[in-house]
Every structure is written in structure tokens, then in C-alpha cells.
Amino acid sequence: MMKYTFALLLALVTTLTFGQTAVTDNKDNLKGWYLKDEATDSFAGISLNKAYQFLQKKKSTPVIVAVIDSGVDTTHEDLKSVLWTNPKEIPGNGKDDDGNGYVDDIHGWNFLGGKDGRDVEKASSEKARVYHQYKALYEGKDIDTTKLSKGEKYRYNMWKRSEAEITPSPDDAAQLMMMGRILVNVQLFDSLIVAEGGQKEYTAAQLEELQMKSDAGKQAKTRYLQLIQAFNLGPETKNTFILHDLKEEVDRLQDDADAKDNVPHNYRADIIKDDYSNINDKYYGNNDVMGASSLHGTHVSGIIAADRTNGIGIQGIADNVKIMMIRSVPNGDEYDKDIALAIRYAVDNGAKVINMSFGKGFSPQKQWVDDAIKYAAQKDVLLVHAAGNESKNLDSTENYPSTTFLDGTKATNVITVGASSDPAIAQNYIATFSNYGTQGVDIFAPGNQIYSTLPGGNTYGFLDGTSMASPVVAGVAALIRSYYPKLSAVQVKEAIEQSQVLLDSTKKTFRPGSLESVSMLTLTHGGGLLNAYGAVKAAEEMTDKTPVKKKKEKLPESSFNNTKTKQ
Image 1 (cartoon, one colour):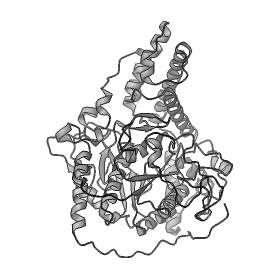
Image 2 (cartoon, rainbow, N blue to C red):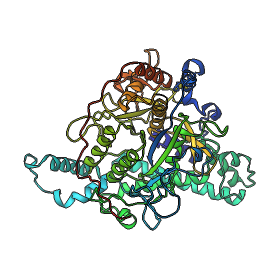
Image 3 (cartoon, rainbow, N blue to C red):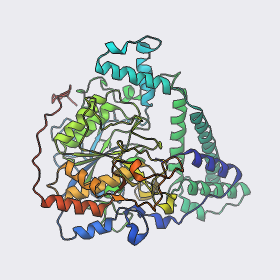
Image 4 (spheres, helix red, strand yellow):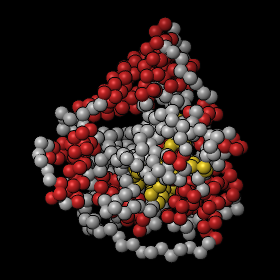
């Protein structure tokens, strides 16, 4: 999703109110910058062409990458050929042909769906859910934490944190006010453009060609194009996308502002109707992997695997990959149960890499997710997770899913990814919005101004975020697993982390959210940037060595069993 920093919001308000011109770049130069090589192309990308040159005499094997996200445009010209298709399921017959408990799961599964075909598109923040769920139990009471079990102490501390954070800060209030002003202005401009230009849906490129006759129409066109430039969106971005995204953001901020006084609406109970308290009530949802809000998942999927052979659109990172879409991320905070079940679904249906471009600050059912991650490790599946976009240090900030389990052990099959940039884009090698941490972030990968697929069948555009950096790493992981299938998930993680490019002292790096010049070693424990060429070379060296025999781990039992219920 678009990242609304205070600097950007202030610039937008100024631009939309007083008409100042935003700084523009040649967007064509930025398409695919993240795949390039700094030495040969002058962009600090991942050196993908050099990686493919290294691999050109090798054969690849197909790899399934699961994308746990908001949905995917299954009709997109650059994605429809790379979608995973369940080989054991007969489309549209209304039967569970493969016996996995999910009927007609052709391209994946939708854990946000109801049996009547409706979908959960919106959810409250987990902070609000936690605050109101345990308010009666803890508010105003003197709790002796020494008498609490480990699980009870985790729950109590989580509630106390939600109580402290539930009241919006002055910054939150200012952000809501600014976003509201921007939305009102954009809606006004759009209505003028539609009325005078005669097109209800248009791209920035099409708007450039529209002739406005009235002064109000001309001004609306100018301001709208300045907005596109300020948001760093491409000329193919449609007005409907911008309006939808802005409206969602304003709604989210308003919900957060009202969260303390209003119990969040349970859309899940209205539509999904599962027993949320029971992890074994798992056969809910439907097979609509597209949904109404597939923007995020479509963009992520294109980064990983957009068709490299069709000569149109873009080229994904991995060339022999099938995308399995699992809808589990609504507009708002995802539910732990959906994430845990999504991970298990991906593992059980053959995924070897799972991309997770989502996150939140509270995890009341963390044990379910922990068990699912351990299950993925047992089945040799690598998980790639976005670090988040709050310019915060994850060494001292809660961020979930977490690689530290409740039992104190650490996940060995998860890579946490921060977002890098390029000095030509942001005067910095690190995106200003990215979270960081010497313990919390494993590596940085391009996540600023990433051009990829968007919903609409043949639409493309730029988005920012660690949500875009994570699939860059997932794509490289899939590339390695495709050409070096004997390597384990842990070895793939090691190949990626050990080959990262370290920045020398002459290349300035600023701490996200500030202008403090720092070493990369203070932002991630690896201290560098993703490099696909280095990663495949490292994988080659690992393959030449005698593989280390893996010690078998006991599968996490928790409360999860294999009992099926009727769909």
C-alpha cells in the first residue's frame, strides 16, 4: 500500500491547496530498477541479469510460492500463466476432489470468505480487538503478575500495552485531519474531471490527453497530476485505485480514532461464521482468491513471478514458479487464526516458499502462528516476512508474526526483510519508512518505487513498502530452490544472507525516519543489501559441499489435529 509519511502528507496538502509543483522523475527509468546492478546500471538493485547469466547452463525445477495476502487478479495478462493450479481438483464441480477439506481450491484458498460467497474486506485493528476483549477482565484491577501463568502474563501485558496505545496520539489526529483534507480535494478534482472529460475511469496518461475547457477543470487536472507525481505513482495508475486507497486509509485512521469508545464490529462473525476460538475449526472460507481488494496481492505476485516469456508488462524475478494465492489479509489487521491456517495450507499443498507481506503490533493467538511456523520448518518450507513501514527499531518494538517463539526459541526458516532504495530515488540506500533492527531485520531489499502488476487485467504501477521488498527476497529464494532443489530452507536463507552486499563507508545511509547518518550494521544484523547474483553463487558453493544431515524435529502438537469437518 502507499505509505503516508508526515512529510508526504504535508507536501500533498500544500500541493493541493496552493498548487506548488511536486518534484518529478522520469518514471520509465525506474521501471525495474530493483532488478539492476549498481556497477553496470547505476541502480542499487539485486543484479538479477548477472544471476541468470550464471544459471544459463543449468536446468530448473518448478517451485510453488504461496502468497498470503489480500488476493490476486487471476485475469491479469502477466499472472494468469503463472498461477498455481491444484492438479487434484476438478474446477467448478462443488466437490472436495483431493480430500484436503477445501472445495474447489483451484488456485489457492480464501480464508476471508463465507460459504455464501461474500468476503470480509475490512477488519479492525488487533489493538482494538485486544483492548475490548479483555477490558472487563483487567481494567481498574490490581493484578498480581507473579501469580499468573506464562500464557496469562503474556495476555495481561498485551492488554496493558493496548490500553496505553488505544488513545490516538496528536500525530495520529493530525494525520487523520490531513488525510481527510486530501481525500476531499481529490474527490472534488475527480468529479470535475469526470464531468468535463466524460470518462468515469482514467489513468494519469489518459488525463494528460484530456482537454479541459473551464478554469476549474484545468485546475483540477493540474492538481490531480501533481498528486500522482507526489505519490510516486506511474502514468498507468487509475483514478479509481487512488480514490479507493485514500478512502480505505481515511476509514482506517477514523476507526483507530474511535477505537477506545467503540467496540470493533465483528465482520468475521457476520460472514465467515467460524468458531474463532477453535483452531481446529479450520474448513471455512471459499475459493475466491481474487476478492474485491486484490491490489496488494496482485502487486506482490508480479514481483515474484510475472511471466518472463510473454514479452509484455514486466518480468518477475523467478522463471519457473507457480503462485498459490491464499487470501488472509483484509483492510485492517489480519487474524492470527487465518495466518496460521494459511501457512499450513501452503505447506500441505506443496509450497516451498511463503511470502508474508503483512504485520501488526499485537498477536493474541501467537501460539497458533508459532506452531504453524514450526510446522513449515519441519516440512522444509522457507517463510519471507516484511519488516513493516513505521521507521521503527524492531529490536525494541513489537511486530508480528515474530521469529521469537513464546517458548523463547527462534525460528530458523524465516527471513525478515527491510526496504532499501537508491540514492537516485530517495537520496539514501534505505527507504525512509522501513523498520530496521540488528536483531529484528535480516536483510534489506528494494522496496521503494517498485513497478509491478495491478488489478485490471493489463494494468501496472508503482508501490512502496517492505511489502514490496519481501517478495523480492521471496523471488530470489524461489529462484534458488528452483535451480538448487537439494538445498534446505535453512541453507537457502543462509545463501541469501551470506551474500548480501555491504556498503562501504563512502556511501551514506540514513536511519529510517531521520537524517542521522549511520552504518548499515546498525540497521540489520547482516549489514547489507540483497544480491541475487551473490545468492546463486553461494547456493552453488553449498551444493558442491556434502549436505549436513538435518536433525529431525518433533512436529508441534498444540491443539491442532487432523480431524476433518464437513465443508
